[in-house]
Image 1 (tube, rainbow, N blue to C red):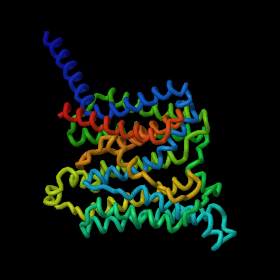
Image 2 (spheres, rainbow, N blue to C red; image 1 turned 120 degrees about the horizontal axis):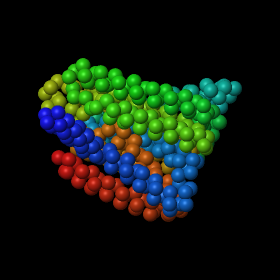
Image 3 (tube, rainbow, N blue to C red; image 1 turned 45 degrees about the vertical axis):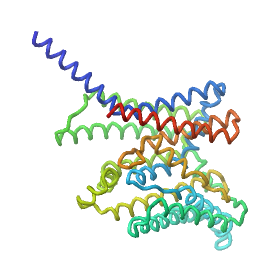
Amino acid sequence: MSTTTTTASSTKGNASQIGQQIRSNLQTYALVLALIIIWLLFFFLTNGIYLSAQNFSNLFRQMTITAVLSVGMVLVIVAGHIDLSVGKLAGFVSVVVAYLQAYTWNQIMPDAPAWLTTTLSVLAGLAIGTLYGVLHGWIIGYLRVPSFITTLASMWILNGLILIRTGGKTIPANQPLFSKIAQGYLSPSAGWILALLIAVVLFIQMFTGRQRRLKYGFKLAPLYQDILKTALLAGLVFGYVAYVNQYQGVQLPVLLLAIIAVIVAYVSNNTKFGRYTYAIGGNREAARLSGISIRQNTFSIFILMGFLCGVSGVIMASYVGYGTIAAGGGYELFAIAACILGGTSTLGGVGTIFGAMIGSQIITSLTNGLQIMNVPSAWQYVVSGAVLVVAVYVDMVLKKNRG
């Protein structure tokens, strides 16, 4: 009798624990479900074209520019700030990089090899973005000028600099080696090796994480749950590689995005910088009283954001193949929307890199599907805006129910 009671109690406890985990991750599940619904909807509306191997590959390539910006924007918003200049900063970097490719290196060193001019162009783009981030961090962090005003002014300044640099003309950036940054692919065999390495890392991380939690006395989920979760993630990676290999393979910009997202996610979850960022966003005064340097943290956040704008600008120039006066226009709104769709709170203190990535893919998936259906661009904006409002409302309802 007692054995039966103990077993029933244990089963009930496990069920309760699983239910609690599902509720705590409800927002993430809802995001993934929404993305799947969008994919299935456009799959039927486009007679299967939408989820063909070629377009599926394009979906992930197209999201990289917005996603790289949203990775940095998560930390900016979590800390209680906003950056309205990221689109134009990325656009300015793309214009400068295109100008270097088209004119500067040909004049200074006409016989230089392509690898050298490409490397110098990329480094110049990253340096411009980072230095602009330093400027933002100093003005916002140390001079205490509100981020909204600072970055709004920067957006106008950068727009003017783009007009000056382009002179109203299109600047080509179609050097073959440089184009591979955003248009290149891994070979199918390299893609499989990468997938295997990712799977191994996922399982190592899972087991080391369990050991770490056990060491510090934290409650552990049942081993089979962690194994199933990790196996599912590994399966998704293998499935993605298998599908895109039917076209041309894993895209280089997607690989670059994945590396950036993993690094920033690790930093935000496992370092003092990340913990301080969430603490400041959650309760600024309490963070200050506990000895956290808000100025230094803000300075670091905007340096990171500037660097990621540089990365995004390089990808933009390589993907589009030229620099124009419209470069980067509207990307700041896409990045912010991706963060909000992904669950980042506009009040600060809450947000994840994974959520921003899913939000970026939702925005890209909507835009791509509407373009395939030849929906006018004006209506694309209307639909995207309506989806954003609905998503925020659903997020509010989920948070209220969870609370």
